[in-house]
Image 1: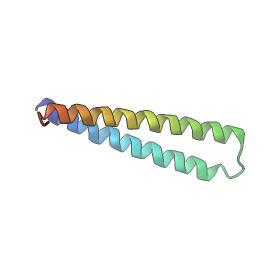
Image 2: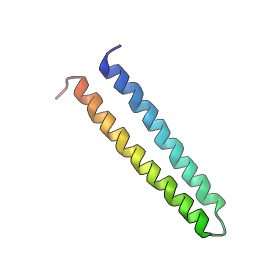
Image 3: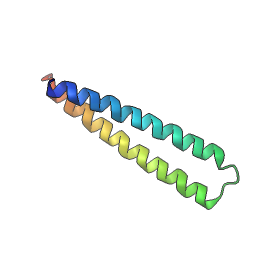
Image 4: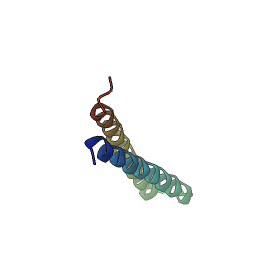
Length: 71
């Protein structure tokens, strides 16, 4: 198994984790109909995790692209 294959699997996993966090945040916002402060904090926490996972996914995509030797 080459480095490019391992990075591709990690890209897929981090992309799915990002998608899962997006849906978790959407469900959290939908359940917070009373607009409580606790619900807002939870929603913000989900948003920051999603942003971090997106950054990880982008970094992994760049590394995967570089590992394939394409320019």
